[in-house]
Amino acid sequence: MGRITDQQVRKLMEEMAKHGELGLAAMRAGMNRTTARKYLRAGKPPSELQCPRTWRTRPDPFAEDWLDIELRLAQAPELEGLALFEDLMRRCPGRYQEGQVRTFQRRVKEWRARHGPEKEVFFPQNHRPGEALQTDFTHATELRITIQGQGFAHLLCHVVAPYSNWQWATACHSESMLALRRGIQSALIQLGRVPEFHQTDNSTAATHDLATGKRGFNEAYLALMRYFGMTPRTTAVGAKEQNGDVESANGALKRRLRQHLLLRGSSDFECVEAYERWVQEVCTRANERRRVKVAAELAVMRHLSARAFPDYDEVMVRVSQESTIRIKRNSYSVPTRLIGEQVRVRIFELRLEVWYGQQQVLSRDRLLGVNQHHIDYRHVIHSLLRKPGAFARYRHRDDLFLSLTWRKAHEALVQKEGNRRGEVSYLRLLYRAAMGMESEVEASLAQLLEQGEVPTPDKVKALLGGTAPVEAPDMEAPEVDLRAYDALMRDGWREAI
Image 1 (cartoon, rainbow, N blue to C red):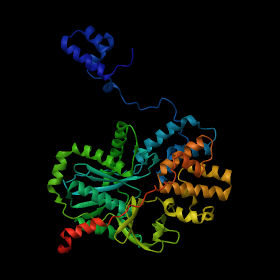
Image 2: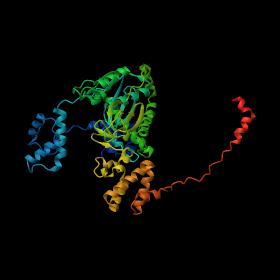
Image 3: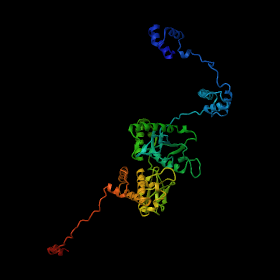
Image 4: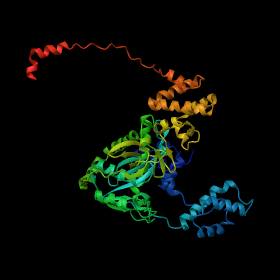
């Protein structure tokens, strides 16, 4: 029979109270009569009958060196058990075995609990309804989101009302002021209310002045706070618990998103905007469960009366002779007709807009990192066809290989026709894509390559069903009979005139 548990003894006591039959009570409690009688006499469960052991059952294997270990721990409490054990094995070869490392780590853990340094205490905070919003950035790459099959490395700007745990999130590339501005404003518009405080950690977006390097609130963040009438506050450096609600909510949000991705059956989205709408729908459904506390928060917040704060920065730049502009240390192509002109660029967190005069001429996604470039072949293909020799050593040549299919087509053309003629043929294919449907041209290239053929422009044209020039029909010039006008004049029109 196994070891008697407290639960069995409690069962024994219950049965004896019901009918007083020792044999029946022992059987139902799963023990023999002798054992049952012992516990009935004692009137205590096994856990209360056991006396703490004050002796060792085996010799202490570390007794010889433990005083030295305690001295080292006292001098450097941050030393880990594994590092100490490895050093002990090095200094005392043959005395200790690898299998003793767990025992040693337990001894170190016990020493820390009895004699180690004081640990930091977490103090849970009481939040007042409608007092503040907390904002934090959290990496969301672990969600493995893809946009049209391409990996989307991003963060979420997460805004939480700590009293009700109401939450909102926007997608962003970095912890920038643009991302913070957009995330806060989006949350305020969704709430329709404004709290007294806005709290953030010591992120560079809000508290780091690039000009001076100081940790005070930067002017862009203060301007945003003034605009919406909120008082800024931040956590102390290294005191994450002061921003604890949003910190803990970050993990909860990502767990919820992972579950909804599983329900959705796919982590691929048509565009970044569609992904962000989906995230916000998940947040909305979660917020509906908190409607009572959310209502308490809204009741004491001020109404949002300010118009939308511009969620972009605006700069004036001149278009270079390469038909590019340089924004945030990255290069982007623009239509060649703008070369030498000054354009106004609106820099959003996820995209750029290029304006000339009062007209928007271009919108595209922002590049990540620095010293990146994006050249749209549609902007430069006409010039390259006039100067095909420039393609061979063009600085941004790789941007003109639109996909692996296009690169294979280029290699096949160069191998068959030589470098010069092959590259001219490739540029003609790009021109056809620019003048028509890029997807149709790429599908034709893939089909020809799969058939083992070289995708020349003529073959692609034939595959796409290129039409012959339309001939103008023969038309005879009509004869003009002026007698009808004479008849009108005779019928009185002359007098009317």
